[in-house]
Image (cartoon, rainbow over all chains, first blue to last red; front, side, top):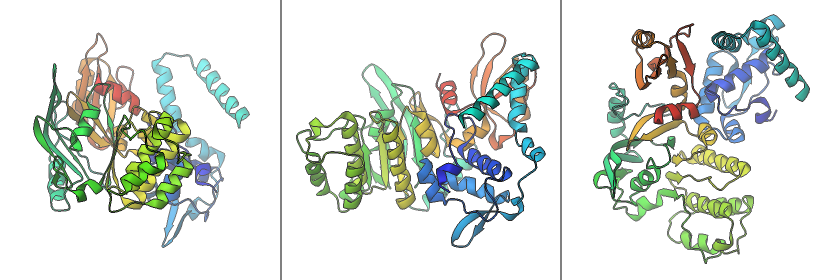
Length: 133
Length: 317
């Protein structure tokens, strides 16, 4: 798969780029878009494709490896690790959204917004995304 | 890998012993690409453009230099390269005085100035041939490849090229001799989005293939975000803060709330206050929490992560 199909950068985000890359891989593995044994791009390929500092990419890969998401093989491209072979059940996948939603909930609280209005906005965003895909 | 926090103590931020011990460790290796100490530059009616600035760049670092308009970024870059003599202080490039470079040192430096200063009457290809004669090393394949990819008409005079083409030609000229230190002053001001991306890829290649140390200033923060592992903020004539971007994102928060709560949060988590704005009921403090032990937001205390642009604005007010 092309490096820039697996990964992308969201500029202007407070989330560091290396964390964005790890989260994207995690989501793709969780949803079954990437399966065990599948090769991921090298540091060089990804740094070039995204025009990102290679140290940032290798930091992301280090963290993916430490978390058991990928396996390093001597002299060969890294692959998606085996323990993530089975795509997580929806229940597990939805938990990955918790940090982002907790943050949104805290902000909604600070803005003193009624829950209905917030949920309506979230629903609209989900549906929008569905159409543009 | 250089994940070093390389900071200069300033009124805005004081550091523990880590930067010093790192500096001592570096001293035993090759001299750093850039070491500036006590730089002072005054202009008529504008004293302290550089006000005792200390700064060191480690080999292979890619550093983005940020500062408000008029903060002195161009002056700093010119002084670092020995193109401008400071009233006080000294710059050493790879251990040699920047003001008296020999040919070997010159060959290790690449510079893309903000205003391209190319000979306007030369056709593009002749201009490059001219520069080629000054350098012991010259990567013809890279030059040819970039001239084609960036669609620069080889036989057209420099004065007849567009601003963007002149800027690209200036970049090619700076990359051609494969410098070990590349300094770029707003290198992408006249490039469109695609041109900028292509230029960033070229920088990434340099770093991958040669471990080039890169220092660049730009006002386009999304570019800087991608390729600069480290960022440095120039403010009031000094490097107010330099750190890996990741560390800034993970350790710096904007706190707002009653002063008592702010102080308690800073004390409890060992925070360093970088900037205070005590306006009315809800003061805002910009705080760095080394190690990333962050206070939690609640109804009275707000703790926000900042993107690079917001951080820049908060730091340089």
